[in-house]
Image 1 (cartoon, rainbow, N blue to C red):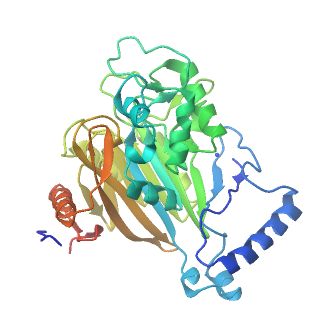
Image 2 (tube, rainbow, N blue to C red):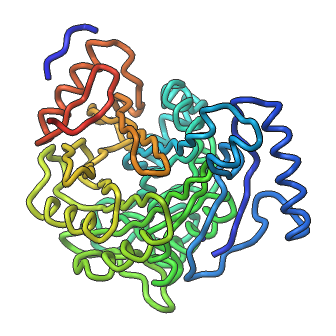
Image 3 (cartoon, rainbow, N blue to C red):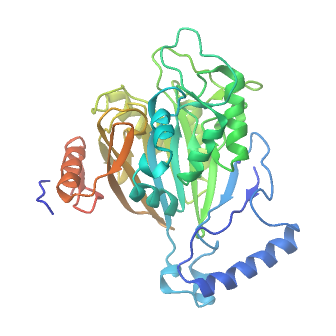
Length: 397
């Protein structure tokens, strides 16, 4: 529309924010008492995951409880209708001696590379998810014959933490660029940083493992797989070898989706797919997206094309075909953040935070006319989607 200028186990983490601090303090004391009595310990890493089982992580956004408990404890009315606020970004690529890390090393501060407005959104969400499109290690060597290979030094993990990253997908075509040892280091370093991951791991059971997050009593699940490479360099994980979950044959991923959907209130399926450097999604993406929704996903979100692609609703559920590059290189292109507000009965609101990547930086588009131009562009790529001036996305009537 036209616009004017207008992992298995249970981990807890310290609260990121509270809306009403007196009740938060009381709830915190009660939570400490309950956990202490039940387990004798409290805090992040209270129970480590065993490979091959699902992981459940307590969100940092507040106490876990439903509408009944909120009313019983006299909490504000808004707590009687809890929401989980999820933010999703596209592809993140760190590589030494090139791309965005050289620029970061020059300026020395993350908020001079990614707008403070963007970092406020990612850090303020109940959960922030992105695609981790590189290995993080000081080991390994580039895969023979592969033109682009990406690896970052272990100390770069701090940048993920500064972004507020809670969960990443490893289901992509660059996480294995430096071989088995570097992939294992990536998994180990993510775990040490208390950042969860899906779609890859030390073995096939870990690659298939969903991640579940409890946010304000709402259980949100994530699964991930890849269908991206024309020439396959990135291996499927095996019983005793690291890799990712592949979805060229979708039967296994559909089973993962079906099983995970039974364990949560809302399931997000991430898929690495499509043709690179085109804003048009293809027929295979449409076919697979519908499959994944039919298998039990509540939303399908894609990456790999490096640019934004359109969205569409299928029987009331959205497919977001590509989130593009979040912070990747010096190319000038639209990008953004997908915001999901999830209630006990499903997706309440979906919106888009308009951004632009250019010159090794990702900026928030703060001018209404620039926002409107991006929203019109994204609408034009989408068969049955409307985006209003505030970035709220809805199915076209």
